Amino acid sequence: MTTTDVAASPAPLDVGRIREDFPILNQRVHGRPLVYLDSAASSQKPERVIEAVSRYYRHDHANVHRGVHALSVRATDAYEEARATVAAHIGAGDASEVVFVRGTTEAINLVASAWGPSALSEGDEILLTKMEHHSNLVPWQLLADRTGAILRFADVTPEGELDLEDLERLLGPRTRMVAVTHVSNTLGVVNPVERIAGLSHDVGALCLVDGAQAAPHLPIDVEELGCDFYAFSGHKMCGPTGIGVLWGRTELLAAMPPYQGGGEMIASVRLEGSTWAAVPHKFEAGTPHIAGAVGLGEAIRYLDDVGLDRIHAHEASLTTYAIERLDAIDGLRIYGPRHGRTGVLSFEYGDIHAHDLATILDHQGIAIRAGHHCNQPLMEHLGVTATARASLYLYNTRDEIDALIDGLRVAAEMFGGVGDAPRA
Ligand code: C6P
Image 1 (cartoon, rainbow, N blue to C red):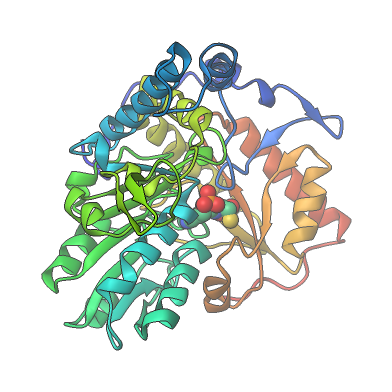
Image 2 (image 1 turned 30 degrees about the horizontal axis):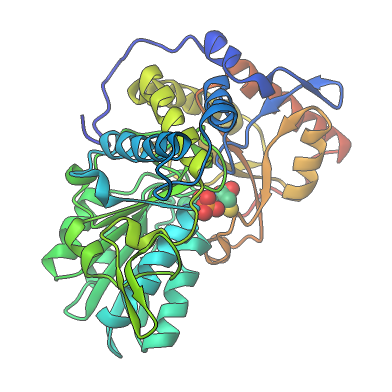
């Protein structure tokens, strides 16, 4: 199965049963049942993941790749098993292509810092899009400052989709890197990264995909996508915080200098100089987040057991329902396309500020995010400073969408109406 070619109608999820896996969901906030609609910021964790991390610390913890004693061997095995689980899950050719990092942000910084300086000369171009998260923008700005490279930005259409024609127009003989988000964390749109990787390679550029909002929701196969680097975070896909993945092609990783220096990443050290360990260890300086990797491995096994095709189908149906209900509210405007999207729903409601909306909803036990979502250039492009954002995951229900709609009505009543309709 490819990333976008998800099975038409897999067996439906038993969401009631799924919710029992997530202990945090069973609580009241401000006296109301918690409705958690902020998974794009960070997802909740199933008992299995909490238990795997706890079991690791209770029974197996020691430092990795160092000791010969039993606990160190067990910890090393658990850490490397997690790497193999990630590799199998994303279709990597070899586990050594999986570098553990803190998250998507660190993965992209790693590529910009380690690949960029020796690959770029003044006037070379890095092609991004206007919908990139700051994590897939600022590292390239820093690199451009260091190297004299030029940043270019593909446009976003009025419907909230990537303007592929503009991207093609901006590709040229000086393009060295195309870095694009797989799924926008504001618009929810799924970008055609397979096509973008092909177009990048046609002009001799590399393609990095920011998978932070895709890996939790879609089956990913890096070989089918054809990109060169793929970055994602554990905490958005049922895993712990502080652990994430950079996948890169072996030959590229092998050719890149280290990102940070220290223990773990060396082959030999002399006062005069050092040599580096093989990938992926060359990029994992210092004691890694072993428990985080163990938890991420378990999170991936959990998602695989439930089935990403079923998760995707559930979210698609919930998203359609949510859009129908939100669209029926006068003065409410949803950003992003109606189709080809995930359950990240950014919206504006009349002249009620997004932060006021989020606060009023919070008092009803409903957690959404408000703000610029680390997407300031996109906000500027949309002509807003902030949006309210509800984001869905496998544990959300139609009842929770109904609660959101009721909550928005309460907000409108509190403001005595919603004022001017949002900008067209
Ligand atoms: N977006 C959101 O609420 P980290 O923080 O490294 O785990 O992920 C960064 C990141 C990179 N790319 C995209 C597309 C993202 O959505 C994020 C994280 C969160 O939208 C926090 S700002």
